[in-house]
Length: 312
Image 1 (cartoon, helix red, strand yellow):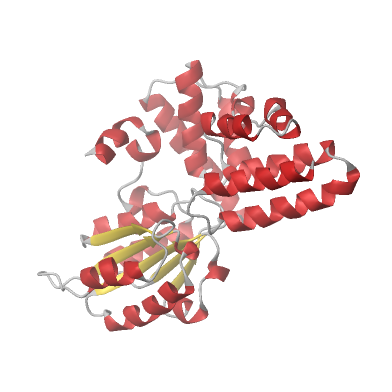
Image 2: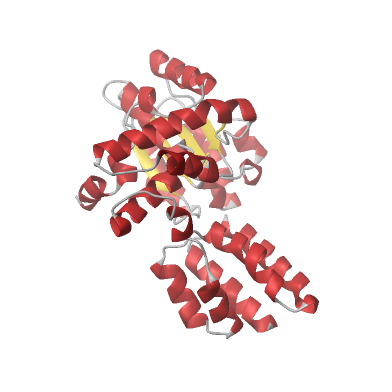
């Protein structure tokens, strides 16, 4: 019930495409997924993209809806261990549907799962192939064991090659204009073009930022690019070893952890004494890597800030 209520207010959910025909994809990807819908048979799939917000989860759910199959969705960033296989996945996968169609288990953020769970699912894919198929959505395909990858069709959602980018940017811009018009939001065309180019390919980030900025300012203008920027206040808290207010700063702004790490690297490191800059860079790199596995990103970034403060 809560999710349904939130979907009325959160633009990312309100305007999430429910069908493959409405999902923003490159032409080649669209043909691939339309063929799956036409065949009414979901294969085992592995979706990967180092950027969030490119449509992996949306496509997984849309495939199931278009074909009319039942699915189980699990965010494995919060349920990473082997127990999830026994308590949820096996119980779901072993029971056949009355209409004879395969069920689908969608395992989101699966690159944060344990090796035991990955090995367990390697066997489960074969054991339940007559009743259930699996869709894995990950940020880093390199974190998935080869025996599991070999049992899936692997689809690259990075969308970063020039040909795909040139095709996608006009589509994304048109979709954002449609959202803003639907919500009766006044916007600047040049600002919107710049927003898409700045945050491409993270469509979710674009929509979230538009809504957050509009809710605060009542219009979309060029000031949106300073709206979420990590500024001097945050860096001053760190230099003053004020971890409490540094955390509060990030929480109040709902800051994206990846952008925080990048801002620390670009804008904070130069403020440090030369003899500790190298150590600080290594810390940022280490915690950025850990972020991909982190169950609670806030704890991870707080630990990073604590270690940086320890260098000062």
